[in-house]
Length: 147
Length: 147
DNA sequence: CCGCCAGATGCAACCGCATTGCAGGAGCGT
DNA sequence: ACGCTCCTGCAATGCGGTTGCATCTGGCGG
Image (cartoon, rainbow over all chains, first blue to last red; front, side):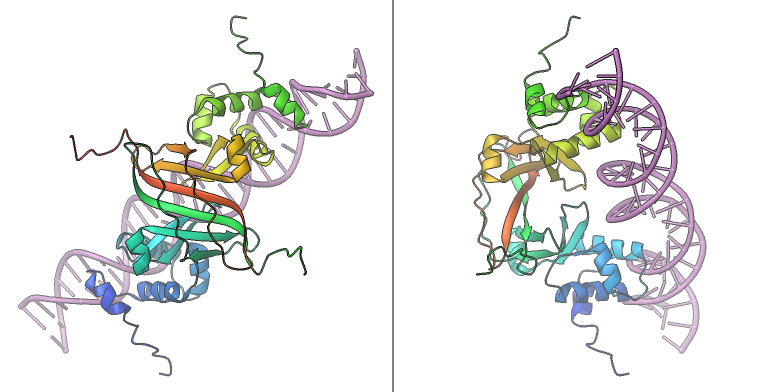
């Protein structure tokens, strides 16, 4: 009617190309993450998609998303998983940095952080590097210096 | 009797200096972590201390340990907390790097990793930096190059 | 256009880590 | 030795995530 919106966006094609079925849940999650500027938890996704997707369905979509390579899963300091889409750059570097605000709890993706893989002891091989910085974001900064 | 062992080690003094009581559970946990060369999970600690400390007591000791500044808590990729003692260097830098083996699941502390705090967007302040590298440790390395 | 089958969904039960409340016991200063 | 406060232990609860199973549907062949 008035909101066919995008034709399910180009995601349909991407999904199909992966040999998976194009379902409402997948498209919805992908669109949501696409426009999110930070990693979202399952809970946040569930609430954002007020549409009645089952918890389990979302977990499965997220699982699929991770091992299809379209997104990653990061472990929050509060023992919850957060998800975000894999960016081309990110995939290339295999490195992803996040900032977690202690106050509002939101997690931001830092793209510009260089953070080279550190030297490991002999015999060790790195696969993934998780770099999480905790502190206060611009909005929650307890500005002790009003000037 | 035969194993008064160290006089509860010098930990007693450290604990007391913090204004806390010297209890068997605290001393045991501190001694255990002192000799562990990697971060231990609550479960691992519970099993190592076959002595009958209650789960909850251990959780509380670990909590106390963290906010007394004697140790830190890191979040494992498998959603469990791991604990290790804070080293003098570590406290100074406020930075701690860990390596987690995907195969055996053990977590090692990397002391030599420099990893300077990265440049943050304006208005952001960092408090803690968590740097976790995932891969294979020397023992579990699937040596594709036997030579 | 119809029917089929693998794959996706929804429901409900389950698991493990961690947290909380409360009563009893131990540390340590007086 | 006394007593106050903190610590311990037990039990119950919360929460994020996972699993099993029946049903439904996307997508393709006939």
